[in-house]
Image 1 (cartoon, rainbow, N blue to C red):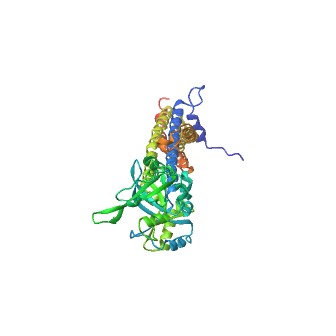
Image 2 (image 1 turned 30 degrees about the vertical axis):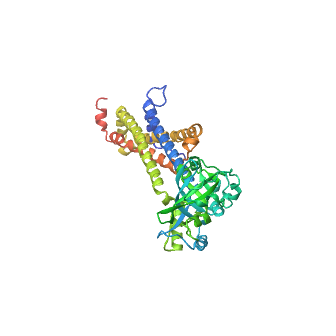
Image 3 (image 1 turned 45 degrees about the horizontal axis):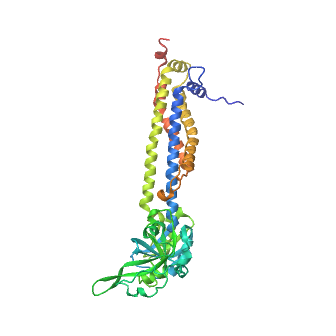
Length: 435
């Protein structure tokens, strides 16, 4: 049994054709479809670039920091961290954990002085939690625990000169290793094998004033995370060296945790907090970078809303096209109604026109958007030394494409309501009076 499609489909498709025989589709229809196509392509392109940048920043952050960080709510150092780590590894979804010490200090070289964030880490366990080992561009992270291997590279006279605040500088110092960010290394002019001074503003109190604590360290490695904020202000030393330098005993600032699902880190952090109890505070990587990711999310939303305006402008072409069709086809509409066509049937004819225009524009806009992103990603390159990226990161999510398609079709459908209503309320007698 053959099923005959509704007559509204045939009439609607015929109304989209041109009056002249040598042209299959009317110019107004082409313009309307083109507007929707460009709007969809622009939306997909923008969302793909915004998502790519967000994921690129996310990857760089997670390459240097852990998924979850645990601190003491009271601000005190954590003493029994070995037992805590064992308890953490029993929590579901936790892959590894490692302690760290966190302080702000000064680094001085022969040519420069920089304030930095210093982290004391356990090199063996750090590579299990973060991507620091993979980010090393020169030297070896393993030498952080064995700086004597690199200390031999120092040339005679490279150690610091004697000062009043450091009377023991004449004695050969014990080798201590430090890892610098790439930008920090260039600012200080200190590379693998070079020596520099670590200065803590908190030192012993003399009769006159507080004397800063100074120690000499040898650069054993340089890392590059891809984030300027990290590469220019972050340095690592061995955990034991940090504990001894800051006189905190066998205590740490916090514990880093790696989990198996980064987007479930908030839920896992809550489970960790419940397992450890007070006064421990577990925060996931999104909370630690809340301002940055909130700004990126808001920017993506605003760009989406602004570019939806392009599709809305294109929808006005649909309104004008259908309005002109209604005006030109008054006689045909009147005849249809006189033959028994209902108002709903007439409305369906013109609504179908708008949906066809929107659907066609969407189907053409999706591959155009993908092509645009491919060209951007392939041929638009940057100088990595200036922009920290070699090309624009791109990632199109299927959910974004579905959202854009639905919005385009919905706007196209909404644009048909007014012309369809005008066609449906047309009086056949008035339209055929002078025919």
